[in-house]
Length: 195
Length: 261
Image 1 (cartoon, rainbow over the protein chains, first blue to last red):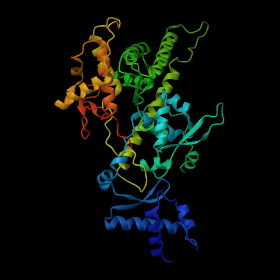
Image 2 (cartoon, chains in turn purple, blue):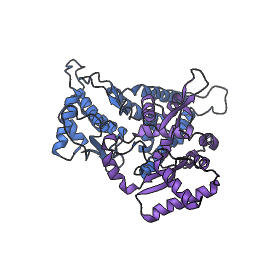
Image 3 (cartoon, one colour):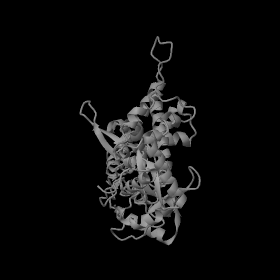
Image 4 (cartoon, helix red, strand yellow):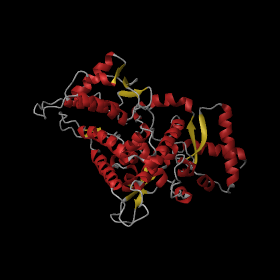
C-alpha cells in the first residue's frame, strides 16, 4: 500500500466520522501497521491538498483527533440549512461557569459556586444539555457530589486541539496581582479530553 | 429543558414577581464593577465607601425580587462585618496588627476576576471557531449574540436613579396589579415606532414606584429574550435601548418565546 492509497483511506475516514478520530485510532486500522509519523505526514499532506485545491472542506486537527470541517465562509449557508436547530450563544454567566469547569475540572457544583459567588445549578444543566460539560463521576467526600468536566464538543466549539491549548491560569492573572497559589497540573487535564 | 439560561416566572402582578435571571451576575461581579467604576485599588479597598455603594445597589436588587438577592445579602453582611472589624482596635497587648480583615475577600475577588478573564478568552476563541462546522456536531453558537452590551449593573445603576425620583407608593394600599406582559408589549410597541429610545424615556409614563419596577423587569425580560439590546457609547455612559435586528418584533402572545432547538 503506497502513501497515496493511505491518503485516500484517511480521506474517507475523516469524511465519514462524526467525532474527531485520534491518530492512535487511525494507527490501529492498518495492517501491516503504518508508523505514526508517516500517518501524520500523510494527514498533513491531505490537509494541504484540500487547501491548495480551494475546497469548501478542511481536514483539521481538532479536539484530540482529525476530522473534516467546512470552511468558515460557508457558515451562513449551513446556518440557513439548519435554521431550526440553532440555539443562542452562551450568556456571560454560562461562559464564566464553563471557564471554571475547563480550568478546574473535575469540579463539583459547590466548588464552582464558591468561586462565582452565585448559584449555578441551572447554568450547569444548560452546559450539560448542550454537551459542553459532562458528569465525570462523583467526589469521594460527604454526600458524594457530582463532578463536572468539559467534553470533546467543548474543545471543538472553541477550536482547541486539546485542553493544554488553553493558556495557563497564571497568564490570566491581571498585572500586579499575586500569582495564584495553585498551578494547573497538565496531566490531569490531558486525561480528560475523552468524551 | 430548552433554553433555560434565565427564566422569568410571570405571575401577572409585579408586587410579588418572582424573577429568576440566571444571566444575572453575582455579588462578586458587582463588587468588581464598583471597584472598576470608582477606580479603586483592589488591594486597598475603601471598605466604608464600597459597602455604601454596594448597599444602594442591593436596595434595587431587593426591589426587583431577584432570586439571586440572597447571594447579594450574604455579601452585604460580609462587607459590614469587615467594616466593623476594621473599626475595632486590634486586640489588646498585640503590638503587631492582625491579618487584614479584607484579605479573604480580596483573594476571592482576584480569583473570580481570573475566571472572568478566562471566560472572555473563551469567548474570543469561540468567535474564531464559530463558523467552522463538523458533521453531526451540535450547533451551539449559531445565532448572533444579543446579550447586554450595557451590563446588568449599568442598568440597575440607571434604574436606581429613576427609582429615587419616584414617590414612594402609599405602602402598597393601592395594590392594583400591573401585568408584566402588558409592559413587555408596551415596550415592544414603543420600539416598533422608533429604532431606539433612551433608557430614561421608558419611565416618564408611569410615575409610581411599582410601575417603574415592572417596566424595568419587562426590559430585563426582553433583553433576555434577545428582542432588544441595551447599549452605551461610553463605559458607564448613558444607556439606549435598541430593537434587535433580525428578530420579528411581534407583540402577539407566543412570539416572545425564545427559539428552542
